[in-house]
Length: 271
Image 1 (cartoon, rainbow, N blue to C red):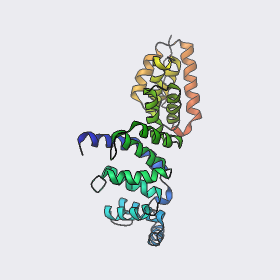
Image 2 (image 1 turned 180 degrees about the vertical axis):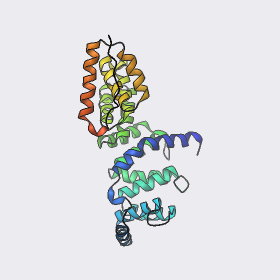
Image 3 (image 1 turned 90 degrees about the vertical axis):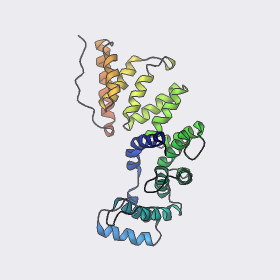
Image 4 (image 1 turned 120 degrees about the vertical axis):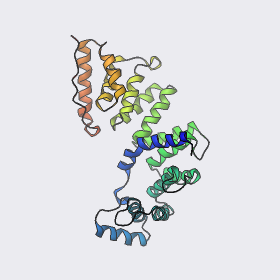
């Protein structure tokens, strides 16, 4: 693969890793206890696809067995051939990233599509990514948007963020704001930053108060770009308005506890 392709895959993996881990079913994960592992082996031998996917995870992680990528792929393939969507998704990712084998975009497309068509939002986002980059298919923005939309509607944060970006470029400001807010609500600081900047875009109607609110939220959740933009905007706001906007920030954080606690930063008031 070229350096550009490798870089794109690396960045995409980093963005989606947390979401993929959160959405993976517990039945597909290698059990910690030895007795549970024995039960998984027996179920896998009896052709239970969920157990086969879990056993594949054991071989991938080297839990209860020696790490063995070929065995992991063999068990995943058995599960995927039974139409088990989580295994189809994992197998597609192995071929997409070349984990332990040569990358094969045709095989990645085959398995990711099978899982995506069964409604797996992780596979839908992967499929959108492949259409965005032209991996295994001709680049097709319309198909990418459609699969992103399917995943976004199921709450996949990376898909929500990417869909918002596409809509913002069109621009479809109302829909872009909607999906940025959805992605923000599940903890995407980049969505908070980009939503704040969208409120400064003349094509979407400038609203400096909303921009300050979302950029402040982005800064509270780790976006350095948001901190910089928020500080600059804050200096231009009347003290009473700034105080009101910061109250909205605190209310949003309290209303979204799963996003995580905001940083305890002191906001300097204008004198």
